[in-house]
Amino acid sequence: MTAMYTDNIEKWKSLSDIDYFTYFVKSWISFNAWYKNSYPNLKTDREAINEIKSSPQCLFRKRFLSLLNGNNEDSSYFKNNLAHFHYCLLNNHIEYGGDRLYFEEFMVELDKSNLTQNYSNRNISYYVHIELERVGIKRVTVTVKNSSSSKTLLCYTHNEYDLAHFNRDKRFKYLSDSQKRKINGIFEEANPRKKISLLTKSEPYLKIGEYQFVDNEDLIYKATLEIIYNLRNALFHGEIAPDKDTNKVYEAAYRVMRQLVIGL
Image (cartoon, rainbow, N blue to C red):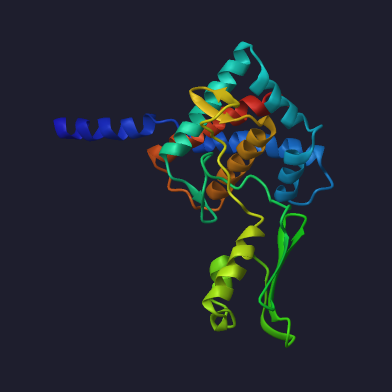
């Protein structure tokens, strides 16, 4: 009899844990309904998230920045929640699409500043061009040519930015070691998916909880939204192991999300 009660205790303990995955989903559904109503002409979630990230007049953005910059009780609660969200991501390794989700190293948005790269050295011309479409990368084109003989040494196209895939191309293998280093260098320079850290050790910075974030409120906003969107994707696509540690991450994400959504 005693052993039976002991088993029941453990079962009730497991059931007493709050399922924050469900709470997170409910907050996301509220957000989803809001942006479907606010942006009826956008067909996909990715398009809506991009618009919400980039539009200065977006109500969701205004709500985030108001809480981040405010001095009242709601703002203090929000900043503590955001700091705890960072803490949970830092101490629990969660990935989506092969990339870790955390503020220490994250691709916030596509970098459009170096999409075309040209370089010439010793009669060898190197060229990289990345073509974007509305929601991501459309085409990557790379050529290496001998300028004196007009011979094309390498011609590569792909619909994703993938250095490993590029280096496996059979024509890449025929380049000299020096040519490989040069074309890889400008290939990486053109990378639109560069990761950055939202944390800093130098001034100026934004103090959020005990953490020093970069002094760029718009970047923090975009990173927070993008990380939460990727957490949503990881959960909906079945990539999340629903254990206690992961539940803590989704609790933190839920608390940030709920405070934003409730003001829409």
